[in-house]
Image 1 (cartoon, each protein chain N blue to C red):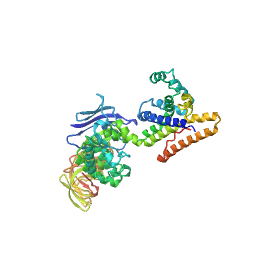
Image 2 (image 1 turned 135 degrees about the vertical axis):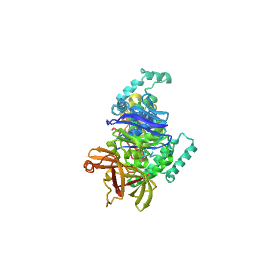
Image 3 (image 1 turned 90 degrees about the vertical axis):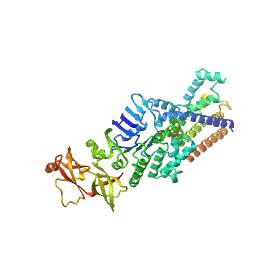
Image 4 (image 1 turned 60 degrees about the vertical axis):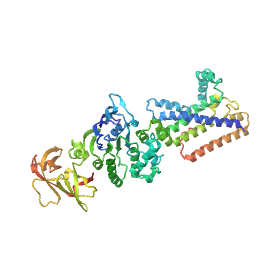
Length: 223
Length: 358
């Protein structure tokens, strides 16, 4: 059994989810409440990973963080290692790839909070930031849970982007989904079957718990 | 010291709101913002609260400028310290009654918050409901929680948007009286938005009439009712005679009133001794000579002070010791040869006098 691959997959999914919540909440807040005319452009960019083939996304990420890009060079000077084919590089790729899965449920939750409640909070002297934490966020908990679960599950199952950006280094970038591909290539159907089954099991349990807890998940899973 | 509002705001639906009024802060009064639905009352109230930004003009609270288009001043709602009561109350569903009331107090020390919540739950009789969620409450209870929440931070100005319209009729009837007593007791300058005539009479000291975005008249409540500035205001208020009266005696449902030194008989149950006697002008009959054998209980001799033609009818203003308005047709006016200065007898059926507690 590919325990190291599972460990890596789960670790990557957890860290990605954490980063996505930190990045996604302010972004979703801005998308929900901004009145900027060109907001739709940002919305389109955030949704791009939903429709792009993972190879295309992976290719551009590879270029963007590679040793010839400013980002890649800066990282190399600071950290002393390259971003591609490392866990950190994989993390960046996963965050971008799963961004819409975190942002869309959050936007939909934030926008459905009754505007009157937000105004009532303002009129009671509470700042916009505090209103977010005291009214909008607590009333958006189902959306936050959905965003968390979808980010986690989607990262757990990613394949193309990981392959493009991370390659296939055991213990560093070989996730469970890539291990399955490896096994099939080597005609090790039994090992592939075991790993696949565990992945199905984990995903099912996570989703079942979520549905059971709140019985309401935004239907944005595109395939 | 006064709240001075003079502003203009265009709405996306094409309506332009243009309003100008002042409310004394030294001697806190209740101003009723009255008008038919869709006339822009709520938007005007939201401008005062800082939830909307007017296009032009200014809003001054004493010497504080809350909004001034010329000086580019706009203070956000957080800085205005107003208590705002939303039409559907907008209670926070994830918080208990107590937490809702304490919501605007977070900048105070914990002990003071606690005292303030206790004071508010007592004032609005919410002790038994402290740990309930708003979804479990009745309409009347929600209204009291929303009032407690708005009052807890000690607002400088209270803004009530249709405070009774979300309630069913019997509850509305009961809470109207309670709200009136509460506002009297609090003595905070207050603006109440309403489209309901009875509410305006029961709650207001001053009244501003807004029709299709235009402020048509501002003045003491009985004056606006009895001397509407123009026909549209008259149509909107629909009650020409609003007479301050004192109850002399009650016998079952028959109430004897003193109106400007004259006695009137009215029908209806109303508590308190100070009331408004409301009479629609079309319910006042006029006779050139003192009539005999008339069923109407109230007969008053008065002099015509003014005759004004309004479409198919003539508005007859009488002085019977108090001002009284009657509506007659042009034919009636010609037949009776009415002219200013004439003496007439007015007759009003007891049942046509509608009593509203003050």
